[in-house]
Length: 147
Image (cartoon, rainbow, N blue to C red; front, side, top):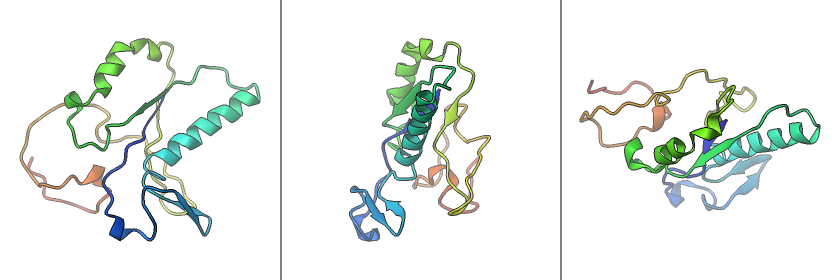
């Protein structure tokens, strides 16, 4: 099972050198909302699965679960994703692994192998705190944690 999301966080156009919602190639890099989070990694996983299948070396089914509410700011129960997964648990029969292709590279040459992510095990606890979504810690160092 390979999980990813195609939606993107809000982008202020004035912060971009080109339209953030149109993919642009520049100096060997791709720029656009979702190029790294998360459309690019989904495409890379799909093309890798296709290449292995075309060589006749794919020895298992590959299931892609791609959602469009990950960046919505809604809590998990408010999103449609859990209901779809629960209604289709047969997608996971025989599953030998889950790849979450929603990770970053450490720099231009070093991929990041993530072996744990916040939010993979879901529980809801209501706590008040900051007003801005800090997007899984990508926005910087330590923050005041109300818990």
